[in-house]
Image (cartoon, rainbow, N blue to C red; front, side, top):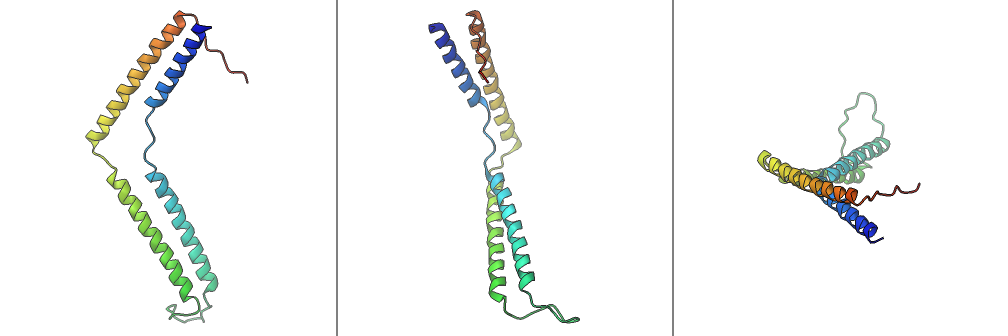
Length: 143
């Protein structure tokens, strides 16, 4: 029983070591950029739809330049929303650009991750060999 408990503890340590060796995903800036672009598209779609439905019909042959009319506040509100979204998007792009690093820094990070992976792999192989030596087999979970 003690050998089995020790084997399970070794397996848990090996599992957690493997988890820490996995590189973390890129910062969520890209996800936030994606969400912001989606929000901008929704704002454009909504703005254009509302403006089209509120616009008075123009007589045939008239110019499409209008002075402030019944929807001027709505137009200003939509314009303000779209401008705000563009500023937020620009801020996210700037944040993403500031996180970029040189090729040599990227290669160094890759080398570090690869060495951590090799170390974790060697540890796991050593522990697996020790477990095999004592004849322990991982019981399959019941489904």
